[in-house]
View 1 (cartoon, rainbow, N blue to C red):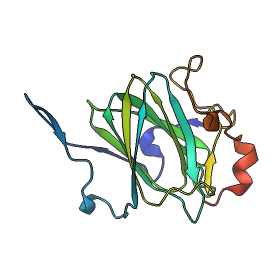
View 2: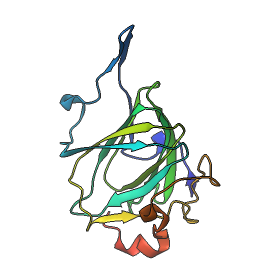
View 3: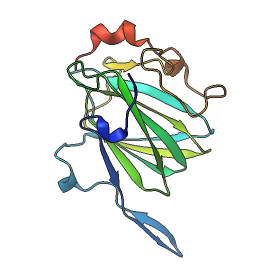
View 4: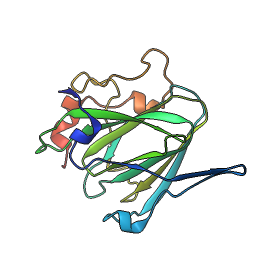
Length: 180
């Protein structure tokens, strides 16, 4: 178990979006259909007002599992993924990558991964393209500090998170319910 290099998790793709700067500001392309075989069904957007906001670890079970294309429009995050595909050679392994407005990196996360992030700056804006619709009945939250996974967060002592994320379930509790 433990942290892997982001490219070691099968299906994860790291992309860099082009950034065009001028005296007027910045322009960037996020999505081009011919770069993906997946069809995206929904776009979602979050703003985290405080540094060290922790969101995650979220996923949806079948038939509403979601692939996600994640990018940061303002600020920066450390993005975390956990492989929850039972037949995967990296099952229960996690990886992380820094995404920021300035580095232009994006991560594509296929179905079968729990996903979350921690903000490194105030007022961080994150855009998600999702391959399936949000379904509260199929959503699960893995506890952010689950000892089975052992994610090493940037800051553990002073974090801001939702009640839903605080109430996440331990991996040993949800493992039998995984549909991947």
